[in-house]
Length: 163
Image (cartoon, rainbow, N blue to C red):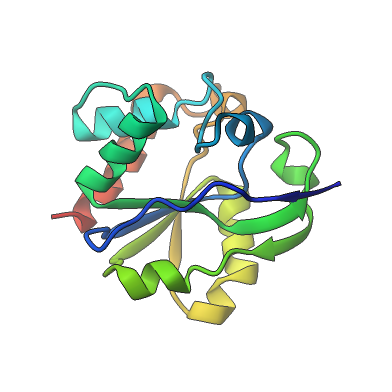
């Protein structure tokens, strides 16, 4: 079944780094915000990178991103997907990232997982020519390969591009 991305991107004129996932999970779609699965470590990792308390509400999550110059969206606008399985993605349609690039001076693009990087390289890079660097997935399925401290170390790379 075709799923359509309904969560608005998070960005403003002060955004310097763009983080891109692949497509929102069912839990994220239900919560109306990114990384809505409580087992996903995304918000814990970002809080550790910025040395701030872990945001709880969608408003706190949005405020954390914007206060630090981080934009957040997903590579895909729609796709067919089985649950939250990126490997099941079929018929992907990319988001139009030009609105973020037109509004903000994005210095670097990072993807949150290998599927997002693969999809970005195939569907977005040919359109905008902006390279992306892949970061490890914060998904619970990646917990064994990426202990928390290692994730924080990888995500700290974004600090090089922020004021």
